[in-house]
Length: 125
Image (tube, rainbow, N blue to C red; front, side, top):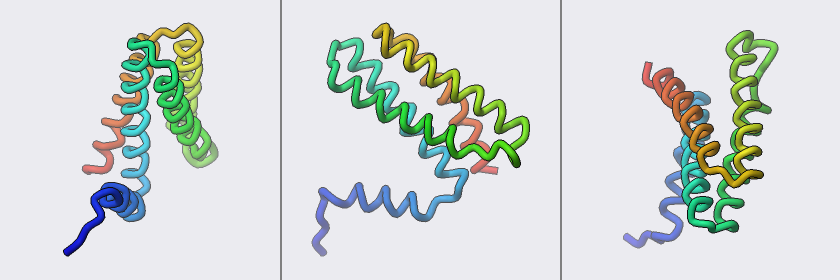
């Protein structure tokens, strides 16, 4: 049996995404944002400008996607609270980026990690 190892992880991720519930997809998005923010903070501390720009752009794109997919009409207070959190995260991320302050990235990362745990608990229920 021949397996192309270069495409196996990509195929696995694609399969996981295509078969995941909506709630699990949200957890996956949080996982990505948390990972990219952590990598961005490390790169920022190391002075690797290209790497932290890339990672912060990716994290920002995920946060923007989470924000844009909120159903504010049907989501009620929960959706409004998430919108406020996402707006805070985007502002804080921009401030950290502009001031090259990895501590701000760590704060956003911690907040999103908490949300990730909440969504993961919903998936497990």
